[in-house]
Length: 253
Image (cartoon, rainbow, N blue to C red; front, side, top):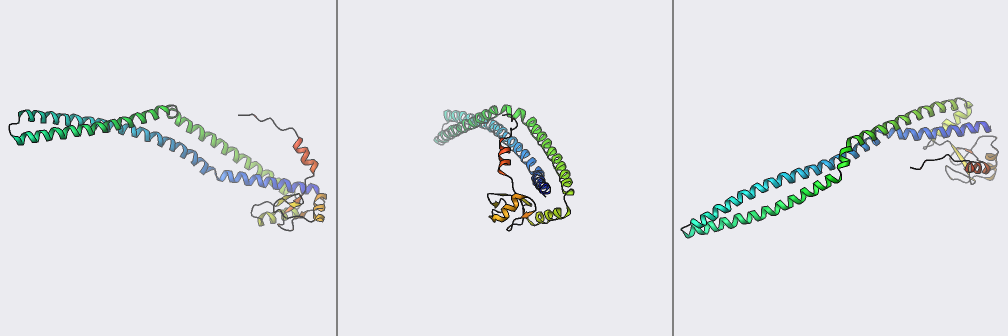
């Protein structure tokens, strides 16, 4: 029975891994869309800066043309003022000149505002020059890496399903049927759980001493009285051995 229980544990581990890989695979379209949205947002921000720069240039040029027109208007008013022979002509010329000078002052203020916006946009674009230059290549590299990762997930999922089928086929029909019934009934799909600290690690219900003793012996399949999951026990020395086992070297990036 201990060997069959080990197969049930292995089956559960495979099912848990398959479920995780399936979740990752199902999320692939949205995760890929997130990458595309990220680059679209960066491109949008850059296009917005370019639009601000171009609009500031065009507005500044238009305002400068209007200043030229108003200066011409002021000069004409000054000439009319010098040549006026009637009081009405004199008064009208003064008003015209004053109006033109006020317009020029207002336009010059707007020109300074546009110049400030232009300088800010150009400074921001200069700061992001490297990003602008590499935006398309970065996008392609990220998407390529993501597609390769997705392909790997697909391969791992196919291998896990194949291994799962083999383990399941080697179980006695009575156990495979029990496992399937529990897995179908329980929402999280976990049919096999560890008995730890005298309780079921899945539902946390305390186990009776007699039941815990039977689980430790591992001579028959014991299920939790509360959730119905198949229970198994990992001896403390096994846990300590696993903890003391040499760990693989992990490169620090």
